[in-house]
Structures are given as structure tokens and as C-alpha cells.
Amino acid sequence: MSETDLGRKWDRCMADAVVKLGTGFGLGIVFSLTFFKRRMWPIAFGTGMGLGMAYSNCQNDFQAPYLLHGKYVKEQ
Amino acid sequence: MVTRAWPLMRFLIKGSVAGGAVYLVYDQELLGPSDKSEAALRKAEEIVPPAMYQFGQYVCQQTGLQMPQLPEPPKLNFPVREFWNSGIITVMSALSMAPTKACEYSKEGWEYLKEHAK
Image (cartoon, rainbow over all chains, first blue to last red; front, side):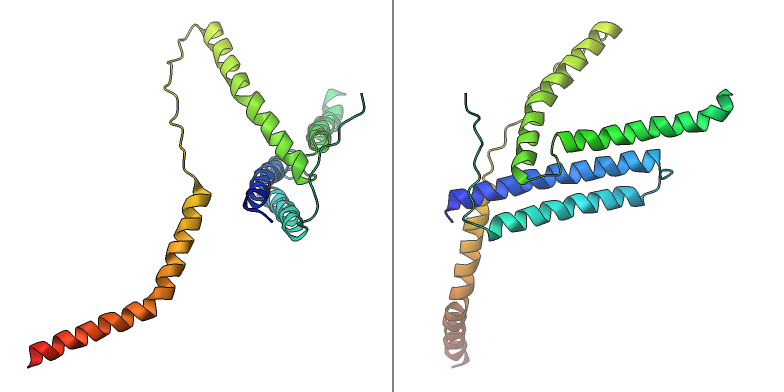
């Protein structure tokens, strides 16, 4: 794996972690306010789930170095 | 009639808010593969600052307040990866040279003490 590929993977991992953490946190807040009487545990649960999903994605990305990330271009 | 229907209405409102949040996450594929999350983050970076600026302008127009023109934040050009890599290389080379240097300095110190002890 070249230096630029490694850098790109790390960038993708960081962006993914930020998005998933924020999404888990946000969903946790929504559920805490709507159904769980403003308790802390849905927020902690959602944040933890998001972080775990991001970690799992990063792990798969780094352990499968020969998978290429491509874009699907629709036929015009 | 209203007091009896109010708990049901409250549940429906809460359910629709929570369901809407879940649907938004599913539709934008925020919890999906890392490519989609990265694309969503880039889209948000493009959309959010102009939207915030336009909202600020709208609030200023409606309230008649003048928003002060804040200076632009400084653009930091800090290449973390390069500093980290050069730091690791420096630390490792220092560790590999440490025994040799320790021998040299202890020899010099011993010679110095022997000369001064004469």
C-alpha cells in the first residue's frame, strides 16, 4: 500500500468516524427526548454504536488492501 | 375528548419525529459504508456554511440588527502526517544511537574523572 493510499484510507476513516459518531449521538438524543424520558443511556448507546460501526469499517478497509473504492457511473 | 386523545396524539407526534430521524439516516446512508459517509460529510461541508450565512443575513434583515463582519479564521497549514512521521524517525534514530552515545559519554566522563583525580 503506497503512502497516498494509506493517507486516503485514514482520511476516509476519520470522516466516517465523525459522521457515524454524530449520527449515533443525534439518534440517541432524539430517542432519549421522545421515548426515554431524557435519560443518558440512549445517548451513550447511540454514540457507542456509531463509534463501533466506524471502527469496524476502518478495520475492514485496512485489512482488505486490494479492494478498490470505485464510483458507479450510470450509462447515459 | 381532547384530554383522552392527547396521549395518543403525543405518542404519534413523538413517533413521527423519531421515525423521521431514522428515515433520514437511512435515506442518506449515514450508517452505511465509509464512502457514503464521506460523501455525506463533503456535501454537508459545502451546504452548511452558506446556509448559516444566509440565515444570519435573514435574521439581520428581520430584526434590523447589523451583524459585525468577523475576520476570516487563519488557515492552518499544519501537515500532521509529515510532522508525525519525522517525529517517529527522530525518536527511533535517537533510541538506536542511545547505547553507543551512552558508552562514549561514560568513557569521556571516566577519562575526565581519572585526569582530575591525579
